[in-house]
Amino acid sequence: MNEEQKALILSSSSHFLPPQGVKLSYGTAGFRADASLLSSAVYRVGILAALRSLKTQAVIGLMITASHNKISDNGVKIADPNGGMLSQHWEPFADALANAPSPQDLIQLINDFVKKEDIQFNGGRPAEVILGRDTRPSGGALLKAATEGIASILGAVATDMGILTTPQLHWMVRARNKGMKASEKDYFEQLSSSFRCLMDLIPSEKSNRKGSNDKLVVDGANGVGGVKLEVLQKQLNGVSIEIRNFGEDGGVLNEGVGADFVQKEKVVPNGFGSEDVGIRCASLDGDADRLVYFSVAPESNSKIELIDGDKILSLFALFIREQLSILSEEEDVKNSRHAHLGVVQTAYANGASTNYLKQLGLEVNFTPTGVKYLHEKAAEFDIGIYFEANGHGTILFSEDLKGWLEAKTKELSSKSKGSEIEKASLRLLAVSELINQAVGDALSGLLLVEVILQHMGWSIHGWNELYHDLPSRQLKVKVADRTAVITANSETVVASPPGLQEAIYAETAKHPQGRCFVRPSGTEDVVRVYAEASTQEAADNLANSLAKLVDQFLGCSKS
Ligand code: 16G
Ligand code: MG
Image 1: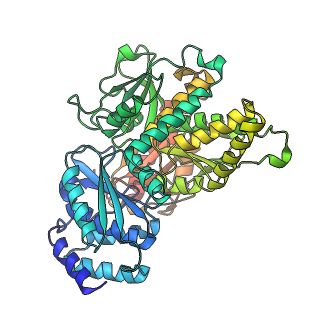
Image 2: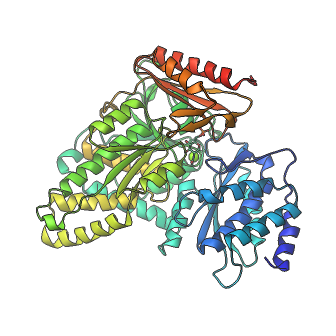
Image 3: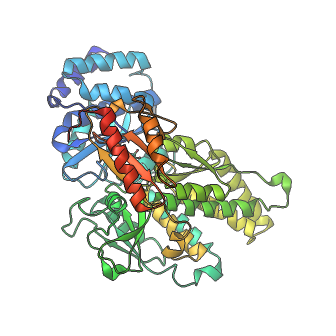
């Protein structure tokens, strides 16, 4: 770093001093905190984004959002050149950057890091960062802070893409770096045209069936997702979507609404009620990277039947498997290709879903919680489907398989036009266009669910009947130091403190079909407890006993 560069960072960073006594951690989904505490961290993430762009010589994304958190919070995260999460290898730098106490410390830190990573300021392409934000009122000011951070790296270019869903920004970063069309209009066009293509491929005897194609009602969490879905739906033919809670009717972001609320509380979001019994409903989270479906339970005030990420995964897996099996019937063995399909879940996946997937003969893999882990695992397959129970997930297609499918459809369009094999390969290609390849995307996930339900001729109830969730319970426990809990085997067992796992095994054994685990949260200062068992009472008991054990072993409970 030359002196001019150092002086520029020094002067601009003096306008963004960090609040005293606040320690931030990049966590599983970037920095998140009360918006009033964030301008310094966001400014510094702007610097990080520009450095990341210099290092990778590619476009980097910077998203300002706090997803499902309350409206007064905000946050910031980075999208890497492939549209995925920031490389884990840079996370400690992000932490150090955000927590550096003074501009001088900041310069020192950046200087050391630039040397270590061998980041070149001259000779290559200048840094380029594209920015997006959700609908939070604090977003505009934080976006300015990020832009100033980017501008403090000489020659760096920042482009504000406006209000976006998180997956839209990730999609744009990926598209830009692949040299593809990358505007918001292009995003909508790609989703709508691949959706229409899939709708055209629905077997005719299914498309007329009643029950599957009646209306869908979407809870937009009073956030950006509903607004964007409104735009997208104008480009879809023959789909009827009613959007509620799209933030323009006085509702507050994530307050009693949204995918996180619906999945955790298992009750209807605001704006839904007994008049909706029997209707197919879906809920997005505040930045539209989570999706769950639900239906209002009959004869109950506010209870719902939840169709979570596990069931979305199961629906996707069934459909993909069906298309692959049609393709494998290709007579010309020389031309056929075995596609390796894998699914990825976390310990939160309901045990009934895992059993169901295994019974289908699928390979089920587990990773720790957090999109970055699931995504990385899913990328190992020709087709990798990943979902967290909370509704984060997508389907990844390897470049190799996509290339093969493109060649195949070309060949089949002349050789056996209209054949089942041609249709199956066209469907897979269209899915790879529709479903966001950069990150889980509630809008593209929702369109794919809608197509598949029509393809199968299923109502939401038919889908819900694929398997029955085991009763489960989640609790959180406040402890003095949650980092004292160290887990192993994708968070299914506790490695430390010693003795805790043995005590957990002893409790589990007392409950039929009992399964449980504890893990430190990556987003809140708590230890989370999950338990499932054959009855709700048993799941509740098991969760409560675990919470007590955590309290005993970690002591000094704060509450
Ligand atoms: C973040 C993660 C999500 C994970 C959740 C767990 C991303 C984009 N988001 O929201 O995948 O399920 O954290 O939160 O990675 P917890 O650690 O507090 O349980
Ligand atoms: Mg989110």
